[in-house]
Length: 67
Length: 265
Image 1 (tube, rainbow over the protein chains, first blue to last red):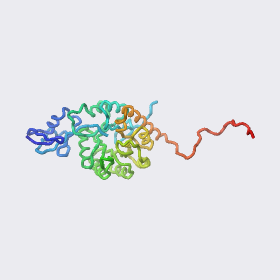
Image 2: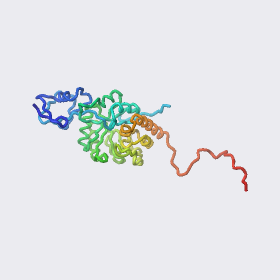
Image 3: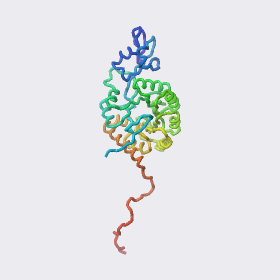
């Protein structure tokens, strides 16, 4: 297992888990979602090929009401 | 009568409405949806926050359904670093390179931090963003933001959510007089007359959120704001009469009858 942080909470994910897998686990539709890995944006085109590494910090974000 | 409003042009986009609506503070997505429709806006701001699996519906679904454009903001950022990262995440999430750049100096006033703002604006313009910069009402700062390539400058009328209206109309007029990019009055609007005043001062558009979303009847206030912005813009184009200290009769004295009669003495 690989220990990562997702939106501030610790999570254990299987070896070889990608960003795309992480997003799918938290959100049925990837529309309007953005992901930061260790504070840097992961472009959608790289979700399938970016694996979660031990200690990674992920932020999975989407639209919220705001001015 | 239909009020003809010439379109607003920001960067390469034409907008039929001069009202930009923020979505923060709406009591429900249903009220928000009806307020967006009533406002007539074509551009709506959203924030970027952690996903909430329990959230019922999404603000993005509402905006997609209404066909309005999304303007991601960088609300809650205190440094250029955070703001630039948030803008890049917004570009990824919403597939737009437009951003309402907001870099706040403290949480009590929510006033912009000019130093961080300039830094973030430079980085984002270099990165190809269309930057609409939320700024103080300082004409020099507004000029610097324009010079470094911002697509619009958005001076505050008064602090975010304060509803105090336009505290320094003189500064807003100075910013308008010098700007070659659109000026959007952003923050502080409390009621319709504030929005009309912004437009009468020559602003190209008004961005407001709380004034609508936290009104007792948000949908009715959205309607009021639509008319206020259109009325203020038309009045600006029409050209107001100068202020003067004494009266200036609109009715001529020419041909005035003598109805006093003969002097009794």
